[in-house]
Length: 531
Image 1 (tube, rainbow, N blue to C red):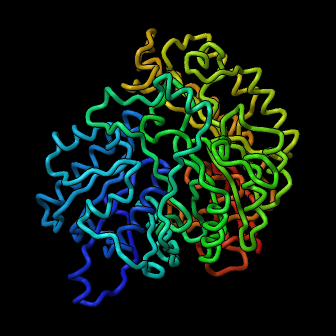
Image 2: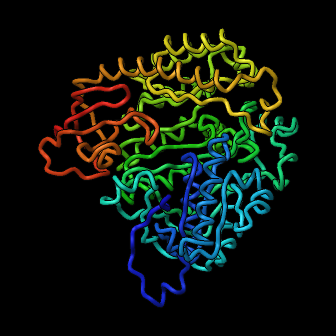
Image 3: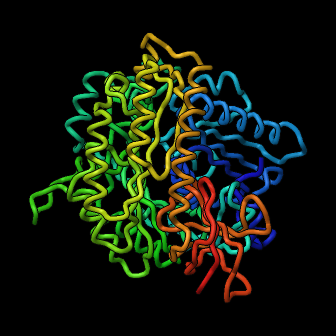
């Protein structure tokens, strides 16, 4: 495994010796990636040099994921791989730091079972990365990091077109919402939703960290794109999920801080911003009421504030909650050209029986009503969702109801997760567990159905002219390049494959071009550049 790469910046020999080299591996979701970017920014401001080569790193950091079993296993495997760079392979590593969700859950077990780990940093302790690395908090901030970083998965196709990306730096590194929270969160805390008593070594206090626009941050995304985390934590009671215990209660960033960060990113060349949080549609419910309007800010207000910013071409948000998709939010999506006509709503299931056991609520009919309303208010709306198959108690009838819903809803982009039994989640104690073989069979059947739906939908793209953001050479072959349209979110949806550069001898990654769709496949489409 290669580390998160950096641009090689010449450093004077005397300075090289004084600046420890840090290698970073970031695992998991975009929300975790932003945490990695913040820790990288803090480390660089604290005097560290970032390196893409594990064998050159004096300090190795693994930011882990602990959402489901496969994520935990990948995190453990990666830690063990970095251990080898510390104890063998001719590596220079003197310290190994483990950060992120795995730490919140297995703090003591990591230290006990992997003694080569020198320090752990939880999701609410990002600033502790400095102490863990043996660096002091600087008294004066430097200006503009020289680093531009790409994730491991992106380096091959983006390395030739990276620009400088860094966060402006200041003194206000965090905002802690100590006096304001959602009533739902307070009630669920009293009911034990956030309890971590059974977790080995988990701290008693829930994470409360929340970065601000002044926090140093080094972007790891391609040149023209960036994520902004608008909130942290989650208050929902979903019985399959342990994120509330890992991340703490829901807390929003002030609207002004988000707008300030967006302006800074745009000034650095970012043209596509994706807003993220555990549930973006709860945004603002814990913030103070405005003195002028008497209301708390909402996600619609945030879209209205960001969409007109000069230089911003694409804006989208991910991770909406079904019952929080309001008419006002849909109208805000519809009225701004720069806002993607795109709704990412993880529905998790369509059977009322399963949804009730999930503590989600809803039903197939109710979800179809929400989708119909959304499509009527936002013409051409693209819908993305995800489902869990094999949840305890899911019968064959429940699964068939889910299949029927997917056929009726005609979802554009769909992800399917096999149920993972997570200790600490409410569902862990449920009976009627579904055999793994049945779970995998249902997952394959669901994806085969979606493949047919997607293939038919992609055919309708042929002949369309649209703007695409070119990312670079295709991951599959050097004979093609790839990009995305506004209807495709980074990393998770289908791609636009480019086989004809049209009037251009070369294309520049991170640049928008006009293209015509000429072919379609199951999930991807093929295009030629026309201008």
